Image: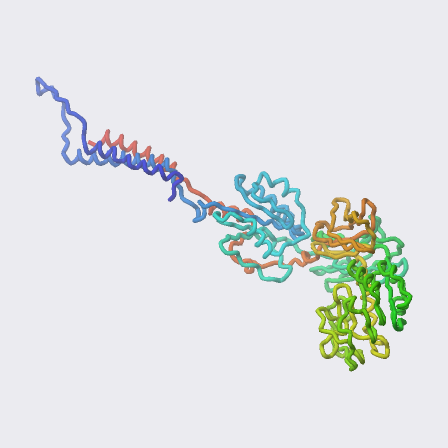
Length: 632
């Protein structure tokens, strides 16, 4: 038993008053004279023992009454738990990811959880609440009601270890008992073990379970083929249950419905195709009608203007292999002899190839270094007798006349992305007859059989360590030459993809020239953001995705002038609908918010006892009156 006002217990010293009164009988006896004994009233004979019993009973009743009055003013109570009387700091995580859109017994899991929380949580309780995309610090039910009711689903789903760390960072009061409450369906999208509770932090879990988890998803879209104005798109779909009927897909461009198709999902997956003709950039949306998670019912795509990649080769040797590689419509290719190079051409190129120039003048090296510092790319193929190459970063300019085989491919390098279906070991590797003396590179792409580098990359420059002319190497006849040089050029001007993922740092090259004070912005019907960006001579490198929260098509603008369109879609990890089991989650697990709040109220409940002591004081006072009247 504890007391709210323990200092009042000093009032128990007043118990000495009735004791003193009873020990020192201060009553005086009056003498009455009678003239005739016959007129005396009858006397009740009291023994000495009965008089002593009456005194002690009266003393006990008075002492008990005083003690009860003092205890009542001290306000005694019984706590529901060891922490009931301690200061508490509570952080509540309310999962608002799209999987919480599924319906439970009383509607959508997130909406129902929000209503229950606002209805059941005590009005005077101060807490910190956070979702996947918002934080409400040191708030109460009244302050947070409007914000929570208007809050929507988030495309971001925080991993539970990050949720726990975030909750811990919000609990800063070192003197308070720390308490975390997780309200979620507890998806296990990553297949990881559920994190253990933090030390000295109480953790409570509320697991909300959907009644039905059937879901159909649009997973991917990519360009299957493109010829002139004809564009063929391939759409990948999947389901987590057996779908009996064909799924209907619709494709709209600039809100105008262009086509519909249907596909039967065999083995819970399928592929749909759209073939359209358009000479304008696409700003489209592909969607289905499904009652599962709405996150994956649509996917936004966009195509920008066709920009040709500007390639300049400066040749001191035969360039016919380069002429064949870059003759397509995708490239704007210029080939010049080293004696005819115009330095003014260099700054406007996306990539410049130094093809075995015998000498690189200082003026040319300065222009090339400006190009690479401004985001442009360069490929260096050294000549047999190189001069001036050290000014563009290629050292070790002395040749060794012995043959080497090119035997190792870095399959993980971006140059070979999508080139090989699997890593091959029986490849017909090319060879060279003489190589430069170079050290091992940090970012090797192709290696010789002794482990040294044949091709490596340093920032935005690719370096070969041997001449590629047919007298020195058979690399021109190797199957590797096409993907290597083609992807070098393609990576020099990244072509915008059909779409990018939200909650990611996507690096996107926007093909436009901007003035010094111009800023690119991304906007749609509901929002506008200014992404991180870096301007180069021929394009602007934009980093976007993390600051966007809504999937859709975003216009890229400069001072309200539309430049292009970029599409962003939510990651599809939420549609796996795989959950942690109760055994995975461990102890302190509740099936509903009602169960949790009742449990917490019992732990925090304080049973006040002062009323019982007031009743006790009245009881003992009545007992005293009865003793004085009836005990003889």
